Image 1 (cartoon, rainbow, N blue to C red):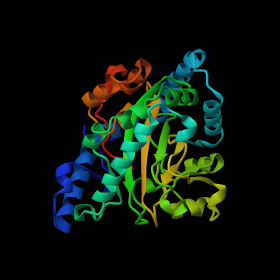
Image 2: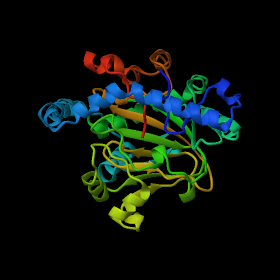
Image 3: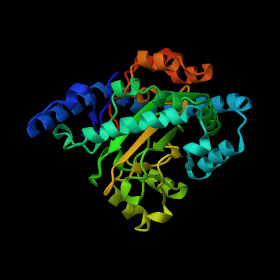
Image 4: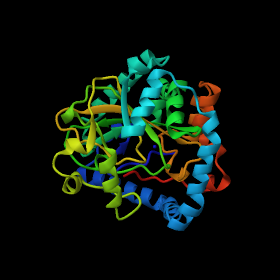
Length: 352
């Protein structure tokens, strides 16, 4: 999310920035310079993606390796209880599933909820500062997350990792969290466009809504399987993005037949395969949305240079992971187990 690679006009918050008053032209210039710098730093990983997605390499080596890994791990998949199995079944049929914090009943949820509300309130307050007047989304900083370690620990819960492993059918990498406060401005930018994530063949994002989210409050939206195939066939690159009007032109005005719109009360938990399925955060129009997104993929992801982008440094991840169970520690420290080439390529700094 080691500095957070910003989306277009997304601000990575630090305490000193929150006190900084800058003229509008200077603020925009800083954003442009930061974006240009992140793009330059991302050139090696963009080139690696182009090589990895070449038909010869993908079909002759990467896919056979992936299928071999699936076969080898099949006897080691976890046993699931009925709730966990139901979530995995929904994911297999629709690419998205929903539960609640109460349903999941993860130890430490009360403490997690308390600190999450505190961080959400701080981001809401910062959103009114003149320095962030042009930002559609604010993100929690590494200082925010380190001051609230319960946020990281919750995402490493064994129950969540069992669900992820059963869906991916591979050992899990826990890629940390991104804490977003999305302003109710109706703007279409960054993750508010339809896109797929690049980290792996399959992956899961687990989102926790900290506010009630209705149709006008920026719900997470995911393509249904048939519509998803149509979009994938119309891309001009392996990972295209689409504006909403482009999607409607391809799939029709009645969006209810080609997407799942994930509304819910505070405490709703969304599970979604964001690598297979096109998805977006619908632009909030009437009410802002505070949500935490946790990322998971296989321990040997297809494109490791697109992972590891939480706001935390590797040293900070190691510090927080020390309080997790051994299997969760291994998932959080997935970069330590990569082959050497996977560690050499600098991670990508750009989002959508």
